[in-house]
Image (cartoon, rainbow, N blue to C red; front, top):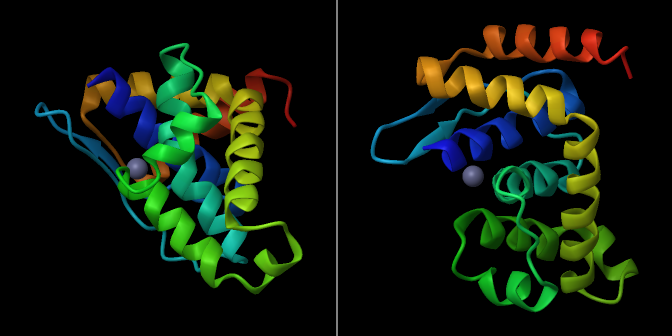
Length: 155
Ligand SMILES: [Zn+2]
């Protein structure tokens, strides 16, 4: 439950950073979770990749875990969010300027963790609210993130 709440909060926070919306969020007692689309198309495939990766990144960061690169790569086919991200990377024309899709994946994985770290107060506030309420609407999520941003002195 706790991991799921942080997972969905991670998706929502990165969506918020990228285009100011979160989507509706919910978690269930069975440990599943949902972070709705926000009805705004992503500006670039790389934005979509970051949103995909943000769930697991936030989940791991909340548990204080650090995934070794080898394990990260091996888990791509097993984790739906990861395979989705890899699919987007494969179809993104920008990928051909890099050494390969694995490199683009890792770059995005690292940069999403930097962004989540900067916004950690917001991730926590949203995840904790989600654990209590089980669902948080897009507008409530935006309100929570805007106030945690203000508390942190703005960015
Ligand atoms: Zn996810």
